[in-house]
Image 1: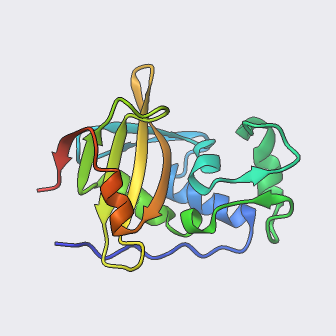
Image 2: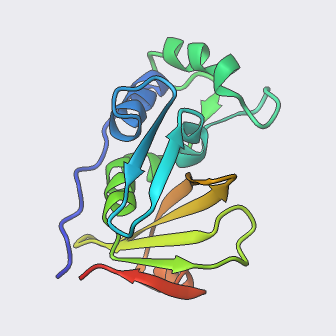
Length: 169
């Protein structure tokens, strides 16, 4: 059965968008949190994953941006985005990304990916973006969040690769 998609995030500033990320992914913690997924993974999420989840960028700052030096500026940007850019499609689907991470429809193990290893996919009852794809990587002994994005059905099919290791029953 296809799930209803969680409500889209509404925001008007970089600060407000970060606060949504903090509420959804960090569970009230300041710098990190973990999510136990129904697939058996325990995924560690850090505050700097905000940059990847919404593709936050600043054309005048060196990459990678660091939360230790950037958080204060993001929180101070309470109207609009100033010189920051971001991917609105990724941002509005933060709730869907969290739900996909916590309770995916399927998980694929693909060791050929460059920065991730597992591909989480969930299908929702919306169009044109019927799926959410979340990439999870492995760092030392932890599984960590890499990024997420909405996908149309044909694009989600392209991510079904590697070895299927979990199907929601």
